[in-house]
Amino acid sequence: MASSINSNNIDGTFPIAGQDNDSQGFRDNFTNVKTNFTNAKAEIEDLQSKAILKSALTGTTLANSGGGAVISDFQTKDMSETRLAKGTTSGAVTINYAEGPYQTVTTSGAVTINYAEGPYQTVTTSGNISLAFSNFSASGTLSKVRVEITIATVTHTVTLPSSVTLGANTLQGMVNATKVITFDATGTYILEFSTDDAGTTVAVNDLSRTRTKQDIRSISTATDHGQAGDVAGMLVVDSTNIYICTGAFDGSTVIWKKVALATIS
Image (cartoon, rainbow, N blue to C red):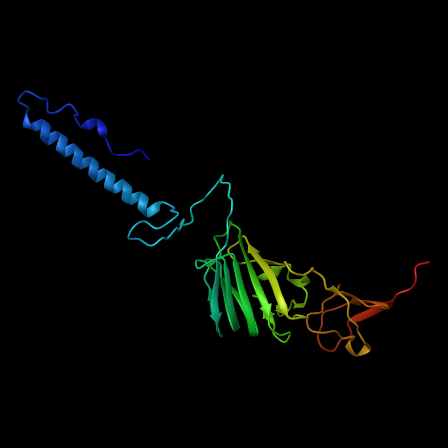
C-alpha cells in the first residue's frame, strides 16, 4: 500500500522571517501536520496488528499468527519445532496444533489429534488408545501430522479412525476391519497421517517400521492361526522355514503356511 502521509503539503518555508505572515499559513501547516500524524498512527497500528515479529512489542504479547496467509518463495534456515509436554491424563485428550508441533501426553482412552495444534504430536500409552483428528486444513490443501506413540506395554492397542484408508492394510499389526493396531514390542513408533480433502480420506505411513511384517521368530503348529494384526502377505523367517500368512487373523482359521529351507545346489 502507498502511505497516506504527505510531507509535501507542509510549507517548510513558512513563516518567512522579517515580515508579517498570514495566520492562515500557520493554520494550514498545523492542519496538515495533524492529518499526517493521524495517518501515521493508523498505518503504524495496522502494521502492529498484521506484522510478523521476532519479539513482542512493548506492552504486548507476541502472537505471530499468519491467519492462513500464503508464504511463498522463501528460503528457511535453522528452523525448529516446538515440543509441548501435556502431562499424564486419561479419557479424551485434545492435541491443539496452535500449542506447538511436537507434543507429549501419557494417556488411555480417546485422543483427538488436532491439526491446528502442530504437525508433530506425541502420545505415551497407559492403556488402549483411539485416535481422532480435527482441524485439518481446507480441502485442496495438504495437511500432514506425525504422531509419535510410545507403547508402554504390548497389551496396549491403538485404534485409528475409519477415515484412515490409504496404506492402513499394510501396517504391521493392523486389523484393517477394526483399524486396531497391536505391537510386538514396547517402544516408540511414529505414524504420519496426511490428507488433501480435510480429513475425509486419510493416508498413513509408518516411519519407524517396514510396511510388511518381516521379522525372525518361531512359529509352532500351536500358532498356525496367527495372532491379532496378522494379514495376508506377511512373512516370517527362522533358521529352518519361511512362513507365509495367507489370510487375516480371526482367531480360529489356519492362516500361516511354511516352506522348508533347503541348501542351494
